[in-house]
Length: 284
Image (cartoon, rainbow, N blue to C red):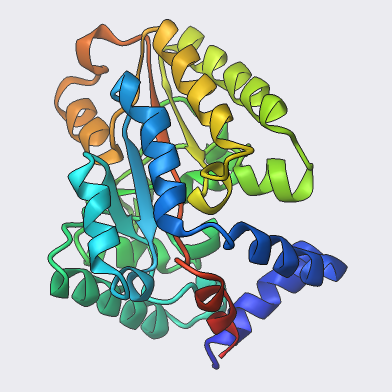
């Protein structure tokens, strides 16, 4: 299977006739250097000591190790998002295994520690969880996007061959920024209002909530204020905004949130490309 097949099938199924408009949107978004988008986000997060977890395509991370390391130097975290941005539901088990192994090798080569996994497109084949366990990941943050897990408020494990997975999963909220911006056309104010409502419900349940907010979108000048307002609101509600690894380790040991936080909010965002050229390379 050519590397382009899973991407084209995904775009056709998800975007339909809007493929061209989506490409034009991504072209505009990539007109701002990725380093600036990240720094916009860091500036919004750091006054409240909020952290972000970035599932990264390893082949993209390896193209600019310095920018990848800057994420770590600012106290944030990187996770595995495949070696190429492939839809695993169209791949064989061996193809998935090879892609994960290549990703881990690439991160080791640039000395980037990784503890968790999210499949591209949050799409998993039946055998993907077994591979997540095989490769020793401590947590997965894409399985929780499945509708049967999405509305949960606690970390959980999945069944693999009649045993509980060794890795922990987190429910992933449906309100991603690609849904809000690309599909619904939300403004920054509408994004903030939507996420604040979700955070308020999480606070009432004393649970965990996780968002998928891609830097290529939420780091844009016209949207980054939404991130700032969400973190400010969550802090007012005594929420905790750690990296996923920090949250999973603390929850696994204590069964609660650090410093008696009323809830845990995990801010995650996939990095699939650093440039529009990277985006186009999915076709080849």
